[in-house]
Length: 148
Image 1 (tube, rainbow, N blue to C red):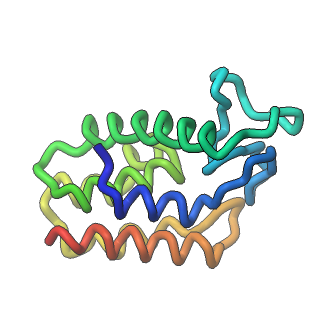
Image 2 (image 1 turned 60 degrees about the vertical axis):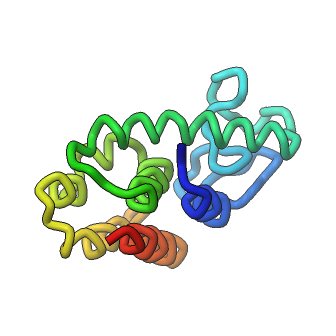
Image 3 (image 1 turned 90 degrees about the horizontal axis):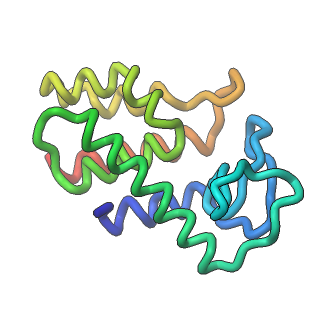
């Protein structure tokens, strides 16, 4: 189960939009960054408006998927806050990004002194460095550091 601090971090940085919108790289999204609706179909501009309860259900469904990915990919013991930071990272960028990231290799090799720097490398979207991603990665790195 994701820690409350990580859940709040995700909610804060994703923001809540009950109507479909295009994210910073043009992907149709709804709720707290969901790209698939409750019906498991891709969100489009014609997606129905959500209630806040539906948005929370979508968020928890998506978090569960990324939590499973983190549990599968991380092969060393980590704390709840560290797990939460990685779930937020994967939620934002995808499990494939985490799987291929030097960040994961550093963690699994117990090279934790470099982990905060590795979070900070993932601040680009559409080839642009985004202030929101800089803030999010810093918050994830801070959350990671709370378990050390």
